Image (cartoon, rainbow, N blue to C red; front, top):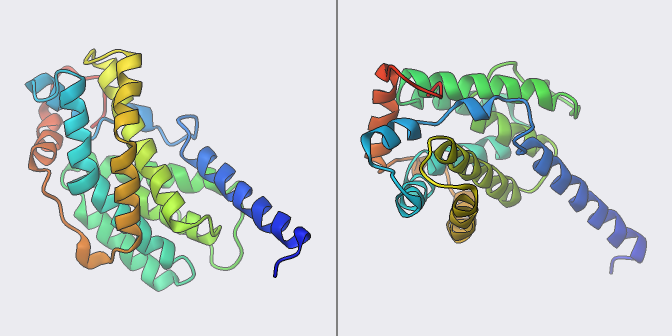
Length: 230
C-alpha cells in the first residue's frame, strides 16, 4: 500500500510530466510550427478545404490514416527506444526517408532540430540526443527520456498538430476562431482514439491512405503565392 507521501510523490511526478508536455507542445515552443501548413494551404487553394466541415473531415483523415497516424507510430517507437540509441537512430533514419515531398522533409527535419535544441533546457541522463532528427522522433525520444507516459505524449502531439492545422485554416480565411475551436472540440474523440491505437502500435503499422493530403503537399512546392513554407 502506498503511503500518503508516496502518493503525493507519484502525483507530483505526473503533474511535472503534464507540464512538460504542455510546454513542449505549446504554440510558443520555438520550433516554427506556425510557418508550415503540411499541404493544407494547397488544399485551400484547390477548394478541397473550404469550410469548417471540410476542414474537420480533412484533419480526421490525417489523424486516423495519414501523416498524423504515421507520426504517432514513429513517436511510439522512438519513445520506447529512448534508452537504446541504436534503435532510436534507426527510427530517425526511417522517418527522414519517409517524408513524402521536399517541403515535408524540410518541415519535419527543421522542426525536429529546433525541438531538440529547445528541449535541451530539460537535461536528460545517459546518452545525449543527436542534434538532428525528424520532429515526431525527436518528440518521442525526449518524452521517453523524461518518462512522460506514452499515450499522454501521443495525445499532446496529435492535439498540437490539429491545433496548428486549424490555425492555418483560420489564416487562410477558411473559418473564424470560434468555428476553429469547434472543429478542435469535435476532433477530441479522434485524437484520443488515435493516441490509444498508436500506443499499442509497431513500425509494421506504418501506412497512409490520405492520398489527397500527400498530393497537396507535393503540389505546394510550385505554389507561387503563399503564406506557408509547406
